[in-house]
Amino acid sequence: MRETTPLWTPIALLGALLVLAWAAAAFDSVLGTALRLSGLGDPPREVARLLVQQRRRTPSADTLLMRAGVCGLPVVAVLAAAVLPLGDRPVADLAVGVVWFNAMEVCVWGSLWLTGWGPDSVYPLIGGYRAVAQGLAYELPHMFALITAALGAGSLNMSDVAGAQRGLWFAVWMPVAFAVYLVSALAMAFWGPMSRPVGSDIAGGVRAELSGPDRLVFQTGRYTLLVVAAAAAVPLFLGGGGGPVLPPWLWTLLKTVAVLAVLVWARHRLPAVRMDRFTWLSWLVLIPAALLQMLAVGIVVL
Amino acid sequence: MGLQAFLLLAAALFSVGLYGALSQQAIVMLMMGLELMINGLIVAGGAFWYHVAPASADGQVLVLVAVTVMALEMAMGFAVTTAIFRARDVDMTDDAGDLRG
Amino acid sequence: MTLQSVAFWVLAVLSAASGVAVFVVDSMARATFALLTSLVGVGLVFLLIDLSYLGVLIVLMMVMEMMVMAVFMIMYMMNPAGLMPMKMVHNSRGAPLIAAGVFLLLVAGVFLAPWPRRRGGPPADPTHALGLSIMGPKMLVMMVVGVAILATMISTTVLATHRGRYDGDRPRPRPEEGR
Image: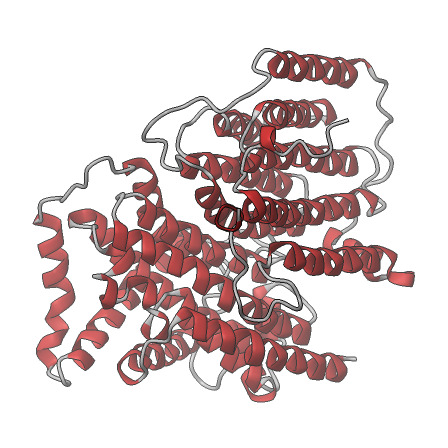
């Protein structure tokens, strides 16, 4: 910790995450209803429906593990967001913020697998295993992309990484790493092309047996994860809060919203990819590309 | 939280792991015991670094190596389990006594 | 007691207790995640002693490791969900005795040994010091670890793959079919 952050920043962070998660859900719904603005009302309607819905139960479910998985999702998302700079400083200015972000995002696999295992039902279990397979596929290129940004800045601290991009955004001179990061951001939130763990071909996968408040928490966690994945691209590759005229926090917000909009839009434009094909792509194409990118950045830094 | 507190935790983890490694019949459970034992070693390594010689990074290197060993141990363990299981449908330690003296 | 030592004791008790839970619970999924809790507890303890990089690294690696472990556990256990509790231990009298004996011995050592005094203080950036000592002059640690990882990767693949180099795509008959 370098300086103590004011008390209101965690509250502001939580508020911003919730509002952005709601915005992502609403935008998704508007895109899904052929751009009719009535889709804007879908998220609150869904929340109200889930809050009053009666819980379904499966026989011999492991409720403890399922609850741990479901509640883990939003908790992990918020913990990952704690190291992201909101403007100048993050809520928790860890010296190893990049590694912390990575660790929290790996916890999502555990969360998904637990949620799939808990209900003792076939489709969620398949979804849980899909999540693990997909996680193993995307993780290595993702790590290399994060390390490349850290290497370019010479620091594992998120604020330092953002600060190192005063002159030139990392997205400009590390385009491959940025592209890899965007792919893994989709996988992190199992969103769009990477949504096989919750695919409709297995009746909703991991979340097939979730109902009522459980499902609400799960969905909130998923949208929050999407927001956090988009928000992390800002300090890592898009220059953090840097920009003319406007204050840093507003720039951070604007860039986050832009990345988030691209991610949400991607869901309606790209088909879902099977995990084995994605593993092939990831290990044979993305890993070598990310390694070459890291080599190039390493040479430039030297 | 002095050195002794850390070593106490390390000893507890190590002994619980030892119990598991000695008593479990399933190979995977035995490996969990081994992981717990290495976990104890990691605690001890970190504690010695912080409480005895923080100026040099030797303790940290030890922890890093222990973490790597843990991952390698697990990979090798599962590979051996898979090989035995393929060859003769065995997943229990009692049936895998080929090297018994 | 300072806030730090309270946090330490909470994490220590959590870690040790979930270590015990690994061998007590019936369900394999619970056992795996109990082990994960124990490992993550140790990772968080490291955050208290200025080892933030190693602590977070432990959390990161162990979560991934336990996810892989969960897959294998469920593959190789006959009763992964623990719906029908059964006893799967041997040496049920010797093992606890030996473990308890070792614990007492270690504890005696912990409290009786004259531990050396602390020399020097932690550097401003322990992560930097760690990086220098594994990647610094001659890179000895990194090379040893790297070769070990490579050897493990090759040998695990050789052990786990079900056909040899000359078997082609033809699956080898399982032993009971060939007999």
